[in-house]
Image (cartoon, rainbow, N blue to C red):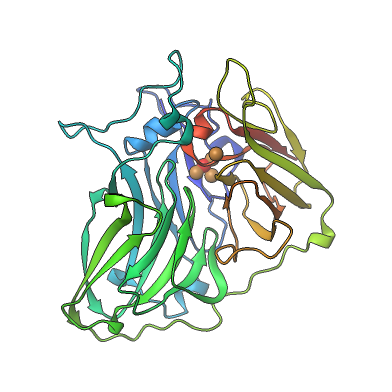
Length: 372
Ligand code: C2O
Ligand code: CU
Ligand code: CU
């Protein structure tokens, strides 16, 4: 049984993959994805109740790229120089099968499951620590963290050229931003342009993970094999992003992401409650701007369905270096409060806000809101 969800998709409620609206084995169900939204790197994955972590771990996830004329006219690297990179971590048994801890129901919850499942092998597009041969030219890399629970701090080694961010979860930024490191929490996307002309032919460039110990500290490698002509460019103006004005917000809602304090049901709660698929936790009017304040105890990547949001503040101060543009997932640091402006449009129905650490999600750190 699965319930497919298009992450970042502007999708009618009955096609959004509500956790209990599953397709039974051997059955069929039609979904509609009108995709009336700007170009962006979306992805899809299973969203089945209580089993999202184990099913995504076994491979039920993939890219869904949306293009448009605005983006197509910019002259960004394209074709075989536009590379989607899905980063995951997995652990394997000796026979090569996936090693995912037994489901938490019935038995106790191990600490490893509680924190979210980590693997010791980094896979990119399903291959362990792969090597990509590139020309000495600009490449567009669409980075997706599709890991269940692992966060990455990505950097090039040697760091001879910047990671020029051009896009975020919801498509192009208004202008490019240079980074030496990219922080990427589960569910997030970051699009960067890397100019491999900074390296001599024959050079090897490693994409490292500054948050990973041992083997998890490396992600993949680029081998610069040849010179290449390059007529791509990164314009200083990429797009126009309409700011969602917080002073127009009709209300502020707080959502707290915290561990269950006590009780025989260990786990993670949203606003002190475990997800109940039959309950509506919030009613939202279409077209209204709201401020949502997310509050954490430990790291939680918070994801909202239906429409993207804009990060306004972190700990009451400025947004972080990776918060620009339209976001649908935001990485909360421990004991942090992050405010975002959000406006839902077009589709009435039931949608979700949840932690995208997939084990936290399966342990019911999720809530339903209804738009009308
Ligand atoms: Cu990527 Cu509700 O999910
Ligand atoms: Cu989603
Ligand atoms: Cu979490």
